[in-house]
Length: 220
Image (tube, rainbow, N blue to C red; front, side, top):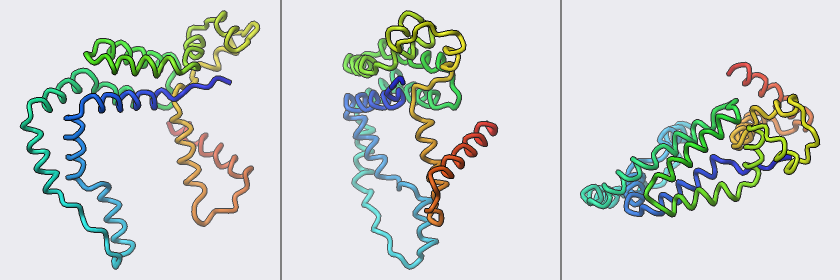
């Protein structure tokens, strides 16, 4: 078994580092979030289900609005936003592409290589060091690279393969380096184990999962 730390989570940790390095831009984003109510659809749904239930008072937005207006006039804030947009905006798209179902291993590794190359060209040294740390600590990632390159010598060392044939190596063609599929399976579990279905046996749950996976695979 090869344990690979989810690369999408690793890139999220990289984004957290970027956020910490640009405090003024982060303050602006936080105050903009305070202005807009979260999940208005859920609030509306709750009112429909429990019309007599009093909702908590809405937060005072005037202070956040004043801060946002002031921050937008700050040249340092605008400068930070431009740096983030020019050098790091692609990270969000990279994470989205890594989450695509059935993404071949070689494509996923290429996305990660592209991220590494672009980050090395960015001006902030601490961000470069963070990405290097995320990759270096992910020991399973090196094995996945060996699998993608069919590096037999390296596979013998890491996986104790004696003489793997092409058939054995081909099953790793769509091996994943993210945990998105596992998280999707949790969502399927929640749909199956509803409030009125609590006595499902483990065996029946397994069958439900197989049916759902088969259905979603054919639908895609």
